[in-house]
Length: 82
Image 1 (cartoon, rainbow, N blue to C red):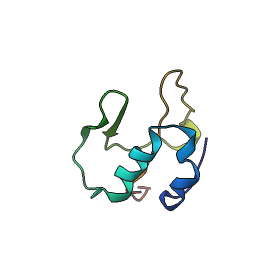
Image 2 (tube, helix red, strand yellow):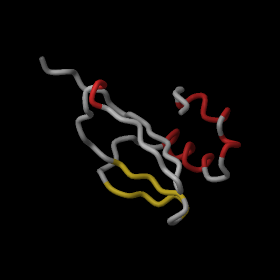
Image 3 (cartoon, rainbow, N blue to C red):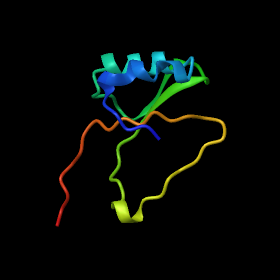
């Protein structure tokens, strides 16, 4: 897992031939996109925009993919309700 800022994406561009297009979309996107699927390179590279409340860290689990690689980008962090 890599945790970094979007400004550093070029460090990781060589890890996959599809990553530059995905990072470029994030870098130039309005980031106010409606939830849904956005094609970048057909079925080979696409963005899934999703809005949801995350679980508390203590309940979170890592996920594993055998076929795909995720680039996860958090657009907004809400305030926790106590």
